[in-house]
Length: 497
Ligand code: AMP
Ligand code: MG
Image (tube, rainbow, N blue to C red):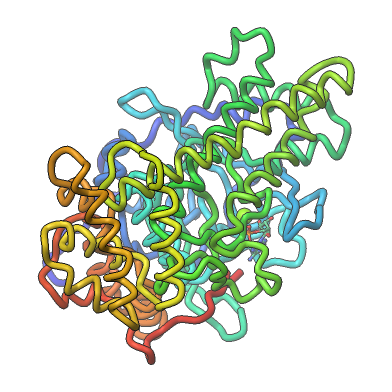
């Protein structure tokens, strides 16, 4: 690029970090700086997010800013740490996981007063790396960038992508791949596994410190409650129930719902082999490592509940002095998961088909639609999106998604009769909740392949722009809205670690 002015080394305003986690007892983390990389190059900066965080995009693009985003130099005020955590991975407990390829630079307080973690992922080995190299490849970094920003555009709680930086180094996976670092933003990086780490060590003091920290960040009202830890736990249950319902309402499969990937904040975290449904089927699995289908689409609420039970176990010493009493409290709080999830899921589904308030028979109407979609290989996203056209008297588009369109007609008769009992027209409200564009697996793969194989970021940029406005109507046949052709279909996704 000729004529691009080179900014001065430290142009603009550096971030003001406030590192409350680094002030907690030393056994909660390891202090270390990221490992510098050879030739950092900014692949993408999320300017809008930077501004929202109160960070100066000019500084972030300056040599000093790039050095921070790459992990090559820490600005004054950063206190980099790798956080300790444990986790149940596919049901098996590992007492020491921790940030093996991530480093928390610090926290910033946004102009709106919210505290946010800034973390680098792929920033080099830490004491928690075990056999890993601490690095990340460009593909998975851009994948997390795309999918987390799509979630944000849907309004679903998620960690965010602040920047992606190429390292100029290769990481060795099955092949040698170009490396990258993701700068990630989170309400916090506290996980169910963070509590499990200290519960496994019978370290009730650390559990209390963690609970207080979590309360300060996520449930400040709990601080003055009679039983703060219980109110914290109830908050996590409510947030996870709402989150998983939101995922499923857009056809999202997280793919690795291990307890270390389950955030106390209620944000979606750790985008690995995640994927969106194309054709609807409840048992869909994309992750290449999920052989038993533990994290299949329809299993997600049961798994979230299971993860929350593990959190409850970890919190027992804080809930009551007597174990029996603590167990009773934990069980009662956990019991609120199913009704909370069910209410969010059912209300969301009714909204997707244009119904405002539930009436008798609505639930079987939805179940019947799902059964027919699964039977007929109907595309999840487009079925709901095109229902809005059908509500306006143009059912051709949605009919065409069913292998046998008569299967749709058989359902639509009852649905139309039900819509007639709704006040007002449903179509606009339906388009506001049913996205036209999702980060479809084949489009994501295409963007990652171009970036990895040809250093061509144009497809990534194009897809990112589209997923930033998911609910806008597109012209018929727009490629970002369409399901994959048979030969484009992605059948497996990989975490790439
Ligand atoms: P994840 O699959 O991202 O949930 O990671 C599970 C655990 O493996 C965490 O403790 C990670 O820090 C660690 N891990 C994953 N990939 C790497 C890597 N390339 N190097 C070191 N640790 C890793
Ligand atoms: Mg993880």
